[in-house]
Length: 257
Length: 225
Image 1 (cartoon, one colour):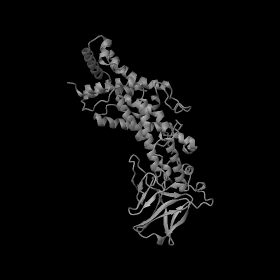
Image 2 (cartoon, helix red, strand yellow):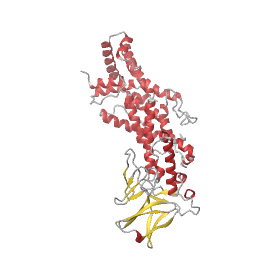
Image 3 (tube, chains in turn orange, blue):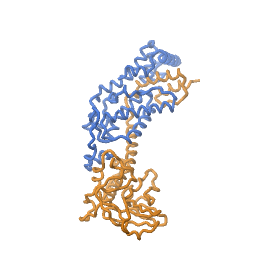
Image 4 (tube, one colour):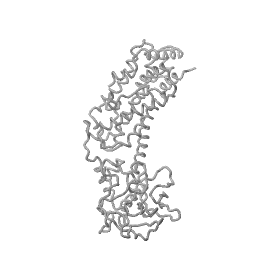
């Protein structure tokens, strides 16, 4: 009967994956010699083109996921290599991204160029405009404990809520493709009308119909209560009323490194 | 920098956003434009390095995947080619060590980052990847086909060193079987012996090679490029 080391060497010769076994010292010497010889064999020249492409695709998917997790807005949402995306879908993505970027008052260019090179802010880090003002979105009295309000500044759309006495604000733009989220009242979930992603009020992704994707959390917005007003720190309202022309730029909360 | 898809980057003119202001620290000053360039330029090198260490395609490809999936996350494309390659090499070494721990429980072969330069593992066939856009071969001066041959010859000279010690017939059967990929039948026909004889011959030859020569890794360290 064949010893495991012989089977191992056979596999090398058949250019197959060898099976693990518990080698003795002699077995190891044999295995090393066989590998040294096989290393000069026919498969040494290079990887199979199909393998190279498949791995490129995998890395691309991984990369896109990382991008999505690190970007703060709907800009993050391109989930796969766009070359694999049909033209119509690509168009939709592009418009969604534009819409999302416009909604937070920063164009994609600004987001990409202004962020410091070396850092990728975590998705749930606070979204703080570099140039912004505190803008009132509601009065303190409008928001009782447990209450949720949507607000729409010219540059930012989002939700404020008060839980355990604390006021929090999150962006109301879906991190998948930039659609505006709806507040579902009994369950207090934010639901995306486009693809059905749901988020908790603190911005954590709850579900996505297509489980292939993981949707990044919603960015939080800086919020404060001052003199009876609930204020969100956001780029100043643009006099031209064209949000895409807004010159404010943003940086993620951890981007200062 | 953060732009994942080369086409998008070019189409939207976001390409200028990449790169940043960091000056690469090492002598191989060129930086890769994006992760795809890193991948395209190095996937073959990592595969060939790993193939030399495990001797079979399925394992070499698996481990290559592991290296890139682990390495491309933390990698900044602002790093220079030299920095990227040392990082890939360090990752490859770890991945190979884990592979041997998992399979045979011994470090059958090792990668010594000090003794290996990924520049030596260029494609010996000279098929310079799809990166063969005009910027194809810019990542380091030694990326010529000659360097590729040097790497191929590293494995080859290692094999030759092992084979040199053997009697004629034994050397021949190992060449036919391992280097040329012949089946036992083909090798037997070539040598004019029966299949059973060829099997015994191969068995003895390998044992003799293993018992006689220096351990392949020592040879590798001494002579490999």
